[in-house]
Image (cartoon, rainbow, N blue to C red; front, top):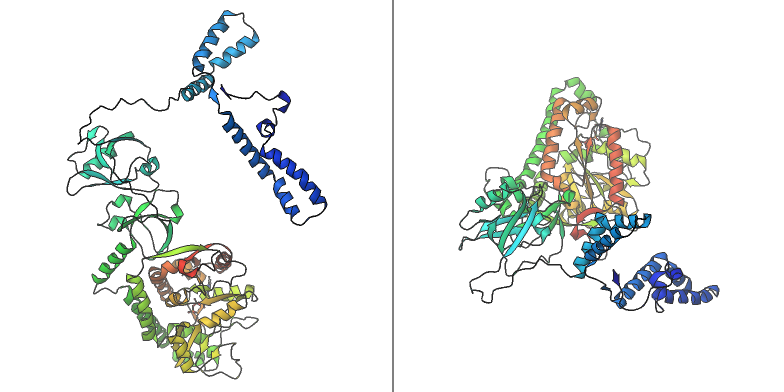
Length: 635
Ligand SMILES: Nc1ncnc2c1ncn2[C@@H]1O[C@H](COP(=O)(O)OP(=O)(O)OP(=O)(O)O)[C@@H](O)[C@H]1O
């Protein structure tokens, strides 16, 4: 029915090649000639010709050019319909067919012309041929009153999903306005409603004088198609901002926020969730999706500015509560309590045991893992100083600053996806967990799996070297002044004091491992995470979590704790309870920094999980702070 106004049909034998080869100037024809010429060069092995030859021979290019030729030819032919009344013609033919004697061919033709799909095809043809696209609107009256507003009728079909729009009442005029259109919702996908549109009617009911709640009620009662009569906003807002991804550094519950414009449209998120921010037009309320639910409609979240204000208000409204910044102090005093408990345990033990099992100075560093080779960073004093830090006041003040910052600092951290390239250094693997959960056991097992690939950082100490030790193997032995200068220049990831000596792990010690092309695996106190989070180390933080108490009692039946005074001491119920409490506190305070969580129940399972997480950290794209990726390192 659609035919060209010039040219004739190609001869039958040429039909297969169709338009592309018919046209003398057809690109695929040109390509064919070009390839023939290239054949000559190819046989003479001219440089670069092979590449061009392969390119021009590629099936995708050939197919693309054929499509291009067809389109060109179609454009030239300017097809026009032969008739705009194909349906009428078909009916006429049907009538004629009844008048002539029946034959199998006539019978078949009748069947075709009567088939519903064929009738629909002819109907569509006539609609296009008659250019009958729009419903005919009544002509505009010659005189339109000045006060008359243009209205738009919008019809949306509600199918079990929210409309994705919020409304509000204009403070001065009392008009009901569309307050915002939620991204990905029904209203946004229709492209017919905009923030600022004035609602006049819903399903034929005037909304004049109604409260927004009453309008919502009408909407809630409506099913199927909903008709809105709106006065369109003169300047529909355009969202020209680019999509940004952030890590939530705090949690948010819209249902508990009295300030949110519409709690049902709110998006709940937890610390550490990656959010896709799709709209920042409103200074107070942004629209976002959780990375795990990208297919869904966006939700409202407080803007950076608003959430910061909320945090500050909360912070000041709790003068007698330990705020985040003081939680570090709480944690430190908790560590001290922990130490006291260790001391109490010591008192509980009978004198004889105390005498016989107390560690001598020389044995104190000894950690018998039965390991076949030396692994640095597992020394008792290093591990105990973490817990029994007499520098806690110092650490607290350092940590307090950072925690205070996070309490009232950026509630969202902009993140980007980072895929480590083979030439990049490995990311630092930082294992964090409550004392006794198995951080060191897992670290040791990982290193033992492949000591050429995984390695610990060698810690620093101010204590003097023992005769059997080698500088740079067990520790880097440095003066107090050197240690303190590393501390104050923020080159220490963590440090503490034990028996009058300073111990700690420096950024440079970690770098030394990474520089060898190895994966540095370290046991890090949670307060050290902020210090370690730098572009140079790009730490991947794995939280080692205890399983529930009953499982722990079973799995830790024969496990031994490292304490101040005893080499081997079994876990008591209260140790396991303390471990669980501390794990909860760590998650609440530092959970936003955890890239991965492993529940250490069965040691074997936890090892497998650790190995897989470490591999993913190095080989798969991960969300990292945008500040870690400068343009020169961007992949
Ligand atoms: N999944 C597990 N099942 C049984 N025993 C475990 C498991 N994980 C660790 N252990 C044992 O628990 C004890 C404490 O583990 P580990 O020394 O690794 O603790 P930690 O988290 O490093 O804490 P700290 O540094 O205070 O010692 C060790 O005897 C270890 O072998």
